[in-house]
Amino acid sequence: MPHIRAMDIDLSQPLPMKEYLRAHNIREVLVIQGDPPQDMRHKVYPTTTTDVLRKFHEEMPEVKTYAGIDQYRGSMSKELYRIERKLQSGAAGFFTQPFFDLRLVGIYADMFESLGVTDVYWGVSPVLSDRSQSYWERKNKVVFPKSFEPTLDWSIQFTREVLQFADERDASLYVMPIKTNLEAYLEGVFQ
Image (cartoon, rainbow, N blue to C red; front, side, top):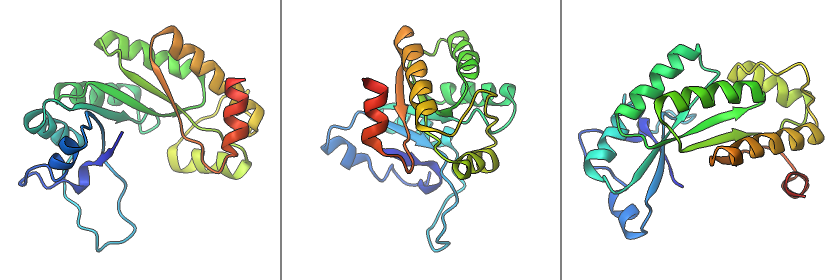
């Protein structure tokens, strides 16, 4: 599924990938805000995710649009507001940032259910070192549960728990393995 960065879209022009998506019969996209570019020569626009969701809804209504949520960005009430705005702008489903606590997954599942959202991709990411844990804490403001350990075993077990949670709700799971032995991780999850 292509990831479309809102900051790359000039709202005064037609969607630049429209013909490509149609030619390749791509029917789903994920619209995210996008991080500031490292190379400042890359042109970006003051375009928001909701702007691009609306633009897809108007120019390519046949494409199912997903939006991201970041449960660590701020308060839950503010994230709920952002989710509602994205739904109003045409989002059909959501991808979450990786979770590390099943209790928080349950709270967000309740929020989605109260809004009638059934198409959710629950994110998980193995964290296998103190350095990686520190990155998630500093950069993404993650608060790990007391039981957390930055090990492959913990990550495999947690992924299994979220997979079971998603299966019980007819939802989906996506994994974001960063610096992970993918074979060992997936073998552990699906054994």
